[in-house]
Image 1: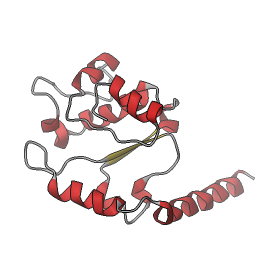
Image 2: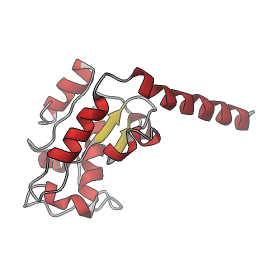
Image 3: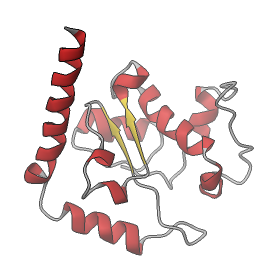
Length: 153
């Protein structure tokens, strides 16, 4: 029964991802292309684009969106939902743990050791700067929550 349930869920999840393009707002792809190709960080690299979602979708599973997203944080995998700051902190933790992104962090940040989880929430909150911009579709769960994390929204 478990195998059938898992297979049914996978079929549903794939259908859900397949339907995203049919239900997307106009000009999403065009906007993502503009951001990816025309906006750069301080070292000349494209800005990072990520998804922070309460749902179970992942833009990496949608071929047309996949090239634009550098990461996806799913609240379910963290065990809490937005607007809980731990969802946002997981995104910050991910970026801070990737050596190729260290130039995006404050100059005095000494890196993060995710295996020891040595950096607590306060440390992670302190490295969020005005460079972090969060766009969402829910005023409280996205906009207010991001503002509470000192993110632009």
